[in-house]
Amino acid sequence: MLAYIFVALVLVSLYFPVYWLITMSFKVRIDIMSIPPRWFF
Image 1 (cartoon, rainbow, N blue to C red):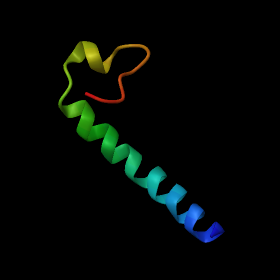
Image 2 (image 1 turned 45 degrees about the vertical axis):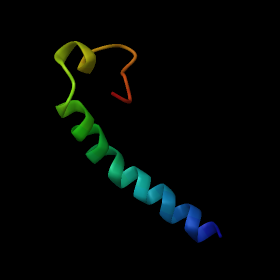
Image 3 (image 1 turned 90 degrees about the horizontal axis):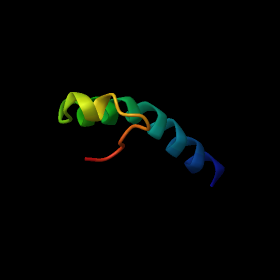
Image 4 (image 1 turned 135 degrees about the horizontal axis):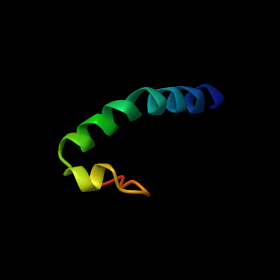
């Protein structure tokens, strides 16, 4: 069970930058630079 948790954490850490780039490509400049950032559309 611990191995599955470790694999899940590794996959999340690897795919998060891809998710970030895809969501940023659909946002306008104000949404990209907002603080706190918007995680979803």
